[in-house]
Length: 255
Image (cartoon, rainbow, N blue to C red; front, side, top):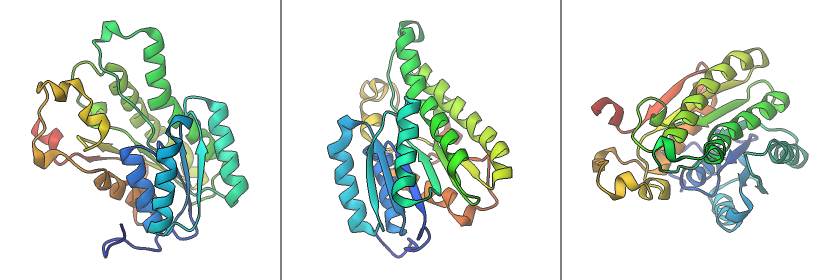
């Protein structure tokens, strides 16, 4: 995991919370921070505990100073508050929160039930809201929040309306957080990935049917997004707040 391009001490003495840490982008993000010397708090659903534990072991090998794994349903504000409290109790501070947790479902707009809309919004948007609230309450000046949005926030496809709406809201939340976080010395930015080689991408019926085609040179790896997240969280991006960085291999430009 560690190579010459990774600064192994950029996050030394920093505590980084990563949600959705068992998934493709979440796991890659956790390992990137580990390789740069962070202490990690890895958050995911109880059902993902086995995968999260494997990521924890990999992070330790990669160079993480410490790793704490926590069960948390990001759609529940009490779960989020408990997770952040546990992080503070274990490590004494939190310096970075990365909101990765999310999922997609595929149906025409009229076929999504109200409960399905709410669940998709809760996981893809409200989870970030809850972690942002806790971060603004707890973080010291110099803290950073990074939200993983999507190019669906700007240009989308059929049958993913709740996901696209949630990601658009997340991009807006990033701007609002930057405004309100400025007085606290806390930055907020987002990355909008395009097509990334993860299970979420390959389970899309639009991809499976061939309706949506992605050229090989526009299919990114989770590590590509992790590198952008690490930059936005670092002091190298100290003059950036309220920004959303598109990382899509030029896909939006070609559409």
